[in-house]
Length: 167
Image 1 (cartoon, rainbow, N blue to C red):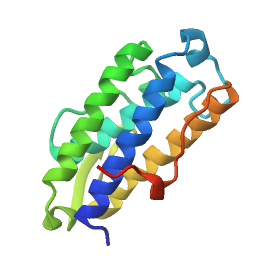
Image 2 (cartoon, rainbow, N blue to C red):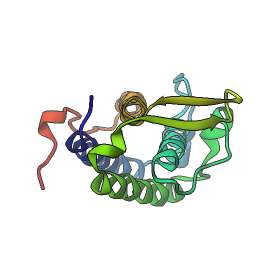
Image 3 (cartoon, helix red, strand yellow):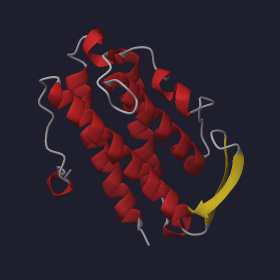
């Protein structure tokens, strides 16, 4: 269904896109970042926090590392300011890249089993679908942030996957 190369490409795309948003966010005021802009998670900062929360949950299910006890309604408060978010975002991107770099084809087979605190039940779903969810969730919410940044007068960069810089 998906390959190790897909995961590595998407991990690189994730870092590229987040690096661009981190550069913009670092120059914005706390007021601009926390202004409710009508998005599902309210503000730029709320959406960025929710995205980091989602990445933390999913990668912990894949790599067995630290997750988060926060639930969806509290995900917008994962970090208290842009500087802390910036550091944690960069660390998460490193973690996702390390996971992808260590992947073997067999790691993408079978089912992933986990307990969802938000839904209060156990799940078992194909690992490949769950990995696609990690990357799809990122793209979805980064798109929301991109729109909010643009509306705030910022100029986010290109988001097209074919233009991912090659190392």
